[in-house]
Length: 405
Image (cartoon, rainbow, N blue to C red; front, side):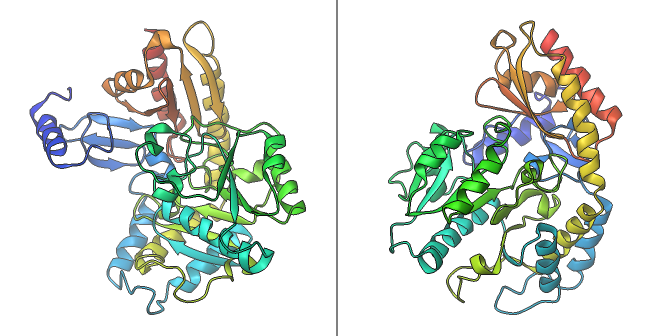
């Protein structure tokens, strides 16, 4: 079966005709999904090796998450934050405990959470650190991907995300990712925060050099600067730990969470920190109609409960070791130039002789495996954490077939 079949062709034509072209999806039209598998409108099955960029860490339609959502749908789904609801307190308490923090500010999408973290850092800088009003600076890393709002693209180095959307928001300084000396030089008396992804996902699953995160943590403590960790993709089990920062024994001042927090059911994001940091907000200074709604809290509470067992972190560790061992065998010989990552997360740099990342993704789609390319020659692998070893090996076998053809 191919994307030229009538059912798929009609769906693709409708999408092309009536949606803005801000995405370039693969020509597959998903109708149903369960676990690590998706089925298109013709009945063909595909192994999902992307998992919604980590939003589907627990797979499609996990029974516990669907049960939590169904139960809440029968009760109440939205109150707005004008009123309390009976799931909100539990959600904030359990998420704060999971993070080892004190306060939670819930939002919906990852970009909203990053925007919230930016506002939090600036407010803290003015109220607590004493930076002169309007002069706060946040240091970020090149290759970052924190979202696509106008403020966030202002400190992006990706031309696709940034170009054509100015004027840009000031107040950010960009330094090379993984360069601790450059970070030290950039932090000054006006710096209120360092905002980093512990592993850069969109950049191709770039892992910083050993000691980098610990060095940033020491620097920010010494200079009275907040360390804000964007764990939207890397957090909640993906790398084999609850948070990727844990691999270096680092606890940031602020966690930025999203994607997997909603279990692939509803969008849920949050900023989690101490009372000193998140306590800077007063009523009316920030918010969201849907942030922390009852349905979102019910699903996220189940996600938190599942993570507390450690089962998914262990699976990501064990299967991740297998994944990277198998991918390592492909490096060299003009097939794969490099493999990076941690846990069930990998960036694979395809040798140009094998085609672009997009071409490899399309060839894998034709063999029943769904991945996504980034930055030309790189494909990303991020299967659901509940994937079986047999299914993972099935997908890797097809990857080998494509690359060695």
